[in-house]
Figure 1 (cartoon, each protein chain N blue to C red):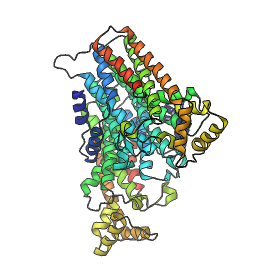
Figure 2 (cartoon, rainbow over the protein chains, first blue to last red):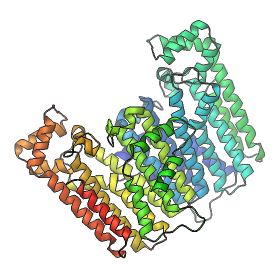
Figure 3 (cartoon, one colour):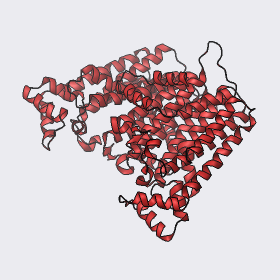
Figure 4 (cartoon, one colour):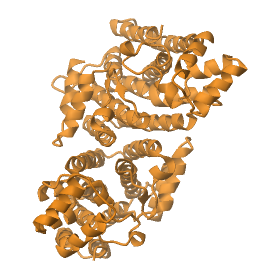
Length: 316
Length: 316
């Protein structure tokens, strides 16, 4: 991870000063670096070792994955008009929307330069498809916004696109650099997909449950944006007629007063919508761990299982 | 070009309805398709012919180049808050900023999927570097905004990044698919670079000179945004002290009244700033044509020379 962080900082460089400045802001903000960790761990699980004297491919590709993720974060914050990211002022709040759009584009392009340097067409196919799927997921999320008739299937499609696709690609790439057969790269993909679904479900739960300081984001962001997430869908469907009148007003008509968030939190609590959401997340996390069953037991496999448990425990 | 247009429409497809809708808006808006034309013409100039039974690589890569260009246009219009693009309502005005950011990301990712299918690491290196350079140019342009102390060199660096880099890459790629030696691909790169510089200089001139209906954009956009372009720099430096007080107020302090655009146009006219800009464009166009001198005379070479002349004649 230290080598990966160094690669990230080194390759965010540019003669245009604002780019390293904004990159430094993002790096300083830290973040979990969960996606690059997945690439590194998947490569290790598959016994990858760099050829003597050769560059460690998994490190460069882990940086690549983080660049794609960071680019989408920058663009998300513009799209969502977020003021906070990971508990700090978001880049768009500090540097403006323009800089966030353009530096996001730069990081995206740079990630493809890194992939080209790595030189594997298979890796490029995996990561460019993931990048397209992320954008599709984000567009689909926008299309479901404020729409309480959104089905569970559609919601799962959104979170698969916006989150799980990159988790899956990050894991699969680790297996590909190790030159492992399809059974193993598919298992890593399944682990990543299910972990990503669990992760996003928990994230959506936390937006209605967590203390802002521990989470590093404003509680109620999704609520104010009328974003359709499982806590809202579950509370809407399990609620009374009166509850549904409330949800229609605040989510579909976007008519919200100061007190509405508290009322929404109370309804979510009463209907057990957070518990429902965490149950779904737990099922996905279990499937993620099960997918790793084809690999022999090892320290890295235990680590990946722990990542899945930790992901769900954040929401409890 | 017909095959290229078909490839563009086919590969803009997605199961998420908004993506083909927005893509159709952009395709309907037409545009000159100048960049893909350059890839096709450069490949032909180099005698490229697809292997029998194989896909025509130059067509797919021309579509790729147009996707990168379209993605940057979508993001530009968000950054600039433009209401018009090619004489029609811009995508951000019709579909909103969010959709423009996200569909731009999708097109960018899709362009890398197309490159991966093509399978040439050399092409990928050229186009991913161009994509990074475009983003750098746009960030640099943002950094020079409202700053009349911007040097000519810095201005040229901006337009090289935002425009000439992709023109150069579009041309070079045509030579690379034909498998031509560096002398020829470098010559194509030089043609594209100089053509791109000429093109952007003329574009910057037209923003202060053209009739909105013939240009398909609002005259004075650059002025209202305080964008630093050669017409403004030339008028500022060739103007009187009183002129410079005016320019500082409208460009640096962004204090503009209704009548200021007319006054700016009068100062630009009086100082010959448009003529200066077009003279620079002409010199670049001449260098573009000279770069093609290493290729034997042919119909395609004449076409490329005409593209250079036409580019400059738009500004006369």
